[in-house]
Image 1 (cartoon, helix red, strand yellow):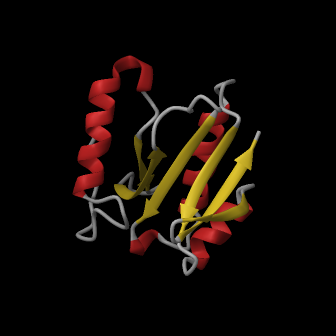
Image 2 (cartoon, one colour; image 1 turned 45 degrees about the vertical axis):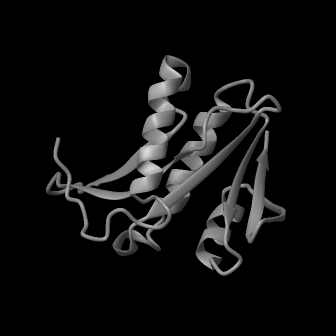
Length: 141
């Protein structure tokens, strides 16, 4: 089915380079990495049935040898402050924790991104430090 795609797409750090990177990871990883990279968030209007691209979310790969997986997410400006970011994060956490080898989930955001910090904290993450110039958040099983 077709979806409406905003002129602001792609948004945030999910740019053409990121899309190409995740596609190459998926292609080289085969069946073992299915579900561990990019996902798209689509809103379906309950009245008209119209579908619109809201944003994206995903993982930087399957859990590492310590059971850690990293998530990232981005919501188009016109869909922000409507709960979609939290919905994406909760879905990513739920999916990751459905695998018994997942022990923790991490995410990074800039110190200035108050909205992202609120989303992570309200989704069960806690701030655990700084990594490069970003804050590190973690959700432990």
